Length: 387
Image 1 (cartoon, rainbow, N blue to C red):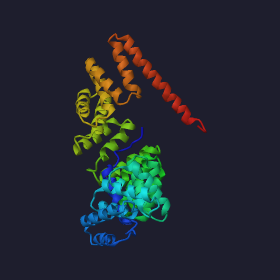
Image 2 (image 1 turned 90 degrees about the vertical axis):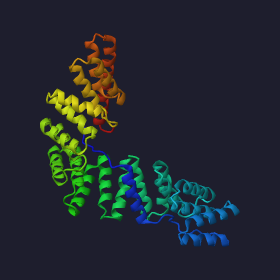
Image 3 (image 1 turned 45 degrees about the horizontal axis):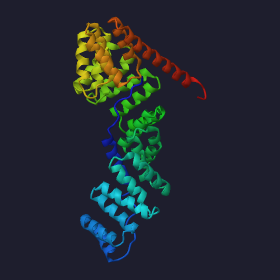
Image 4 (image 1 turned 90 degrees about the horizontal axis):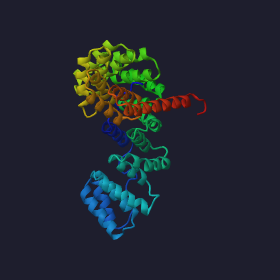
């Protein structure tokens, strides 16, 4: 299991994407669209003066007189977007596209309105159309990269984010998002390439050190990964996840006493860090510090983002204390969280067998055996050339 820390929130990435996109081109990229009549000229004049509410009223009058005026519908969308009425802008753009699918800039405007609403899946098609229509424009590619990132389609996001980084090579935040996308796409060399650029500009970037550490872990270079996280910890001991990341890498190396110290430091920074509490409990259990393990695990399972490991380990601790009903409930909770994992089925089966519930135990053992078989088959398939 590789080290993957919590992904940047979509809100933060979306804000960064909007800043980049707007730097590449203004809302309403098509500019004023041609139409006729005095009311149209008045509406355009109101737009130029930034009188958006009056411009909206004027465009609605134009459309009322001629409902098939695609240009007016598109301009209404631009005005509504300036008023931050993105659902209204979306409706206006869609109406304009129905009337004239070839109207310049409409696909980008629609994609931008959908992006701002967080409708990332819907934004992909119009943004792709805009990108094909204007290959030299960076704005649709930036928005495509951010949309794919927000949808957790990281491999798809990478090439578009690379375009965005080329457009703004000094933007460390954007480069960090590209590095994260590369990490989640398991393109580890790409992560390290971005890391080198970031640390050249900012040698004390803890986030860059952490990304490099995650990439080194993915490349099965544990000592390099630990060194990167130690550097990050030294540079920014309050950085979220820095102690957890180092603790997790030490935990993988079976250095449990050192790992426990790091998990405790993470919890000092954030008392509700569910992963740190779960792994602290697991580590204390491995160190045979049962009371401390139980205390950490009890805290971990009460958190809304509790990880499955906490429920499995708590079940193990309680079973060791003879609290079988509580232990069985914890194993069942872990199974509900991910029924494809073997450990909880196997632990529950052993517990049921010890209680003389042989049929129930055999059913759980059978599930565990079936999952082992599936995992073995998957591994064989992965190691077979051409599969």
